[in-house]
Length: 110
Image 1: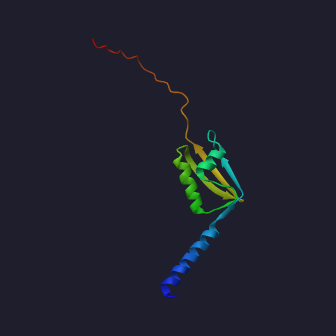
Image 2 (image 1 turned 60 degrees about the vertical axis):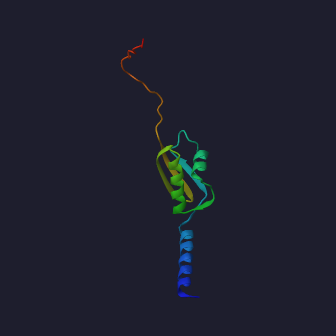
Image 3 (image 1 turned 135 degrees about the horizontal axis):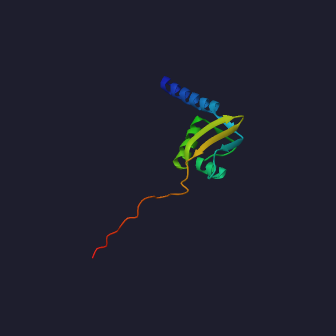
């Protein structure tokens, strides 16, 4: 086996091994801060599954997927005691719009 091929195999092995070391097994997903969007909707949009190994790459994908929905102003992910904790801040909703001013006088064409 030539030297270059050995080097490539070692690099591939180490990269695969290091990814599995940094992965966390998740037993539960805890979602905080959501008022309008349900937990299940967040899991679906974030492509989040219980009982899965999550790495930093997975966390980045979850963040990207959730930010792309346009529902959230801020999202934080953390791992604690085999729990994936998602803290959210939803964008505010406009519940009422008041327009205050003088009535316009529309000129009619003759």
